[in-house]
Length: 452
Image 1: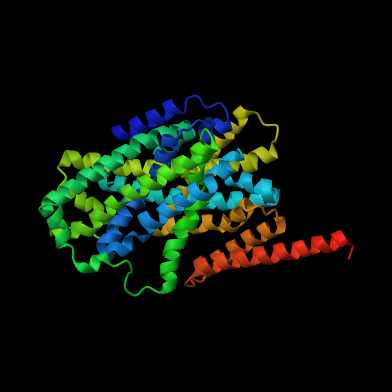
Image 2 (image 1 turned 90 degrees about the horizontal axis):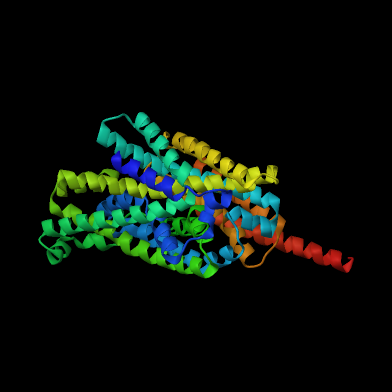
């Protein structure tokens, strides 16, 4: 608890100068390359990057590492290559702002709803993990532990904003890296050295496919993290807060490199830990049990702090994403003459509301990985209009139609019917609808122009 209190104090100190919504949501656009890169890494290197990935790799071998770190790293790389410079050049605060500039207010409103749903689901995943850690350490039942986790995170985010988020991301990211490097070193020592550890791994762990998977499962496992990451408000907020478009792009490249490099450590823990012959847990219990078996008690406490660091550096980003779209695409549109201070208050109020809703979602008991993939799938609903907008399209009806159709297809096919390949159906329907409506409208414009 002292560790969490220190992080809250640091966030409050870093965010103390906030006087407007821009200060709170994009850190006054003062971030340098290192801050953007480290914050991107820490934001995306969340609880599932450590807990879920290592457990999945321990169970499935290298096949469990496809989403993390590989697919998510590709998503961050896509931000660097195609999104960071363009969006920062426009001076936007949210993705919905950009869509408004290309496709109008209707598209902005729909996009804001999608972003809020995605970010709330992501927040729920991190609160779920945080509550699990609190329950395990304190003996509390899950529900009171979730309430405690939510209050802590709400306070942490409420006063810090993105400026506090970035400062604590750098601290937390450093703690995470040091903790898992120490765990890796202890695992290698217990195995008899790196060579012995490598030799003990059975050949089956090196397979990049899991038994019984269909090609649809494999394609979705890659596409959902990539598409969900590259259009995520949580990730893009870091580049939107950069000092310049060039800094935004360089920072995103740096973030992708750090994420992939550090992400290979939990993969190694999952690959080689089971060969130690220790009584280890399964799935999400695997990594905590490995750490408890190898660490002395005092170091295990520090490791638990590192897990909390991973959670805090992600959940506050997601809550800020909800605050951003509620404030910029909601409150500001309803009250265009609102003062900067009023917008700041609205953003902080939205943070509180988002945390409460996320806690409700976390209570549903869905697995950590499923919540994260759900958040990515929801965010990817915006991929088609964002990419089209960056390519120069201003087909308003096409953008609206694509978002609506994709949201309906995802809701019915995935959550309603559980159809295999629901994400592919969603993406395909969005591309088809956008293209068809854009062509139809362009044809109508030409006919009107010629008087036909």
